[in-house]
Image 1 (cartoon, rainbow, N blue to C red):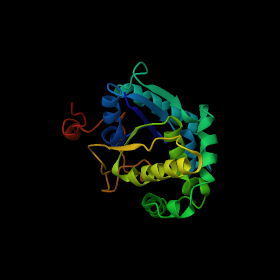
Image 2: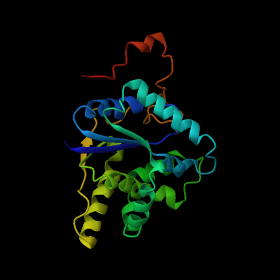
Image 3: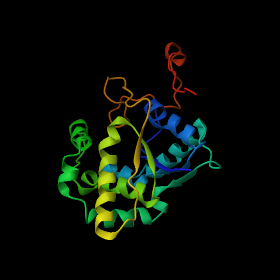
Image 4: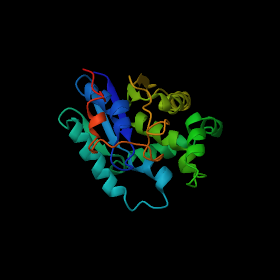
Length: 221
């Protein structure tokens, strides 16, 4: 049975972009793979470091939404990233060997700099997001990672860091394979990728207007 890792930032109630882009895939994988699903609260500080007062509430909201859509703790491991200290320890180790050029060329980094101009993102935490993501994945020696189209560059950095680490210190980490989701990018109400940060999301817990309620099909089993 192949091992899967995936995580989600707790930034508020989850929306239909999360459902279509990740959670439907997670539900299927928990039946066929050894799955580790993490609420990655360290990652939430990437953009919300100035005011983390709502972080604990957002962690709870994310967990409730996961359980509501059908993730089963009897079939997959569900945990909070910061409660496992090895995540941040491996991140520190990987940051020592991560070339700056890899991070600066990351297209997702450039896209979010443009779209989140109301926040100061000139920090290592934001630039080094893919290094922490790599630590999350490699810590469990994951074979596969379900990702959306916008995360492919991050996962490629994870693969390159695994390869670089193994070259220095011997074969330790497998290079994780990419499992692309069927719905790579869900548009929000303004046409951009649906995102809480962009203010264009429909939350899973929302009561949809009657005209939309039966027109959105997210499950496909």
